[in-house]
Image 1 (cartoon, rainbow, N blue to C red):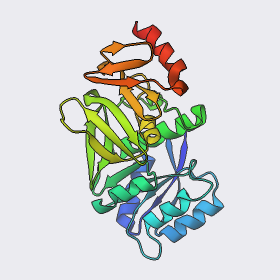
Image 2: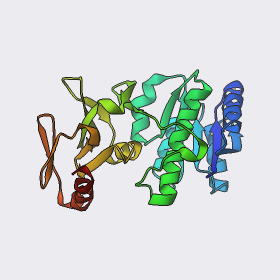
Image 3: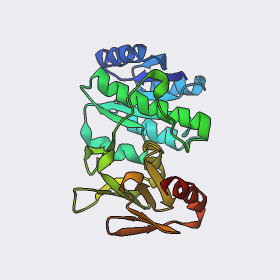
Image 4: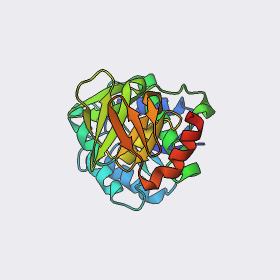
Length: 251
């Protein structure tokens, strides 16, 4: 898969660096370099094949966040996604509200860039093969499978090891992530569906409209529930067929 992208930054040095990172990434194709969000908006309107924007936030006339909000309200919100590239961390929480794929803080390395690009590949591969609900493995370009995810927690971006996750509870626009060695869950501004797309399907299972569980943490299974430590999580009707398949393998 090739992802058509544009880079947007009002600093020429930063713009050229992102362009060079894109050139070094086999599955990315640079369609345009833009020195303003206004210029980027014109490119987006004239190039319907653009899928991904590496977008600075603080720019004159139209900010990157304002552009992202325009795109989020458009008909292309699923097929045109944003990765923010900024020197300011105070917009991290707001980036979740526009459903950005990632948030890169300057100065970032090629390794950091590659990690964010891999998230984009996950997303678009899943969109192509599973309607956006399935995240496909990134073995086409020999990228290692990640054992962690990043979550926006208050004004920080926090790295969470997948092995530490017990289960996740969805609460409207927020999720509670329960961890093995933490007395209190981590609260993050995200939908459960968005987080489900980030988690490997062979390690996590959604059993309820409000719960995702770690398969490695399940210690007991009943006809319609699982037990993780002292918590019992019941399976809703919508997910019973998936749960039955899991039961057969688990037993």
